Image (tube, rainbow, N blue to C red; front, side, top):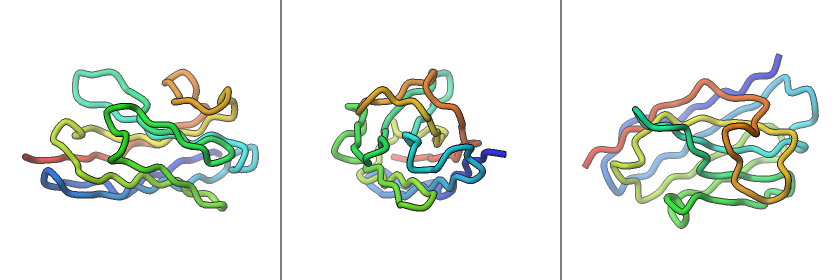
Length: 126
């Protein structure tokens, strides 16, 4: 069965960096056919899309992370989120997601993904 497994979360001070990884397995279609995305959800807030890499590895970012976060994907099965200059407001549970239908280069919304990871916690202290 399809699985997305995130890793790399943790606690860091403001201004620090973290790199999240998400390994996909068991997808019904080849990995390269999926748009891959990162979402996050802070306590009491809705889940929001923050970075998407489409099937051509073209990327889109939410304004809140643009210039600080970078999404990349390898050719095998893993997508990454490099997070620099972290702020306390970046504290959230981070989720990886895969969508077979992306509709072009755009930031995915919560209704797009076919598969979700279990999430990894990122905590940024001031």
